[in-house]
Image 1 (tube, helix red, strand yellow):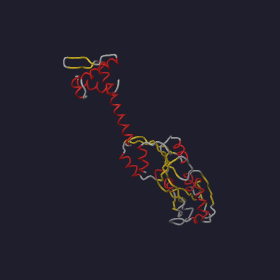
Image 2: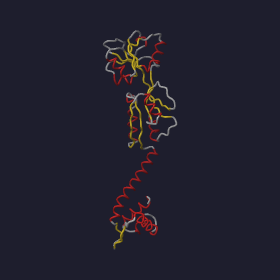
Image 3: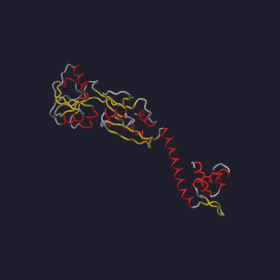
Image 4: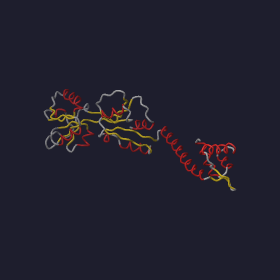
Length: 283
């Protein structure tokens, strides 16, 4: 039994005649009749009965017709989906995200992507940069939006956005100038350090001849912002995180090296689906 036989059976059942069915199928009567008899032989039952006005389905034939329609429809759907997958018009993209990633992706890009590829689905995984890179390298996700600095081998990357480090503080307690801040503005101020950026910050302070006072050190930028809101010091964190979580003042710092990059990463040499490649190109 094969799809060709099932399609032929459905046409014969529809036409109630071998002759007209053969014409629709662009074949001759003998091979079509032979295929129908082979189906009956394989199933061990009669599918057709001859009536004065043509061919009718037996009760077994009606049952077989119902299932044949489902099988043929499923086969057609599978073929269509596979073709669309290969053409890059549908599929599932497994994307890893940092909590602050949404602030850094141009929403119009994603909206346009959705309009062009409405059948694409996303499976999102949230985590920090190191967790997400590990999942990329393990093949658990296709892509991830992560933040520098990080050390990772075996990945490809594309920079999506630059995210400057800013100062977050309670302006009732800490009186800093309006506008852009200079590193000298942080001299002798209690600072809240997100440890991941310690090397970047220390390099900048060293170049400016400043010995920073880190009143608080922590391992999460959101915690740094929270403690700044509590008046415990001035947090130095990426702008996207400050905009998401800070309740007090935010100042841009006039030091271009104090910035991180948000990058799209994927496993080097991995077989990405066509639709995943299109998302990389779009971003």
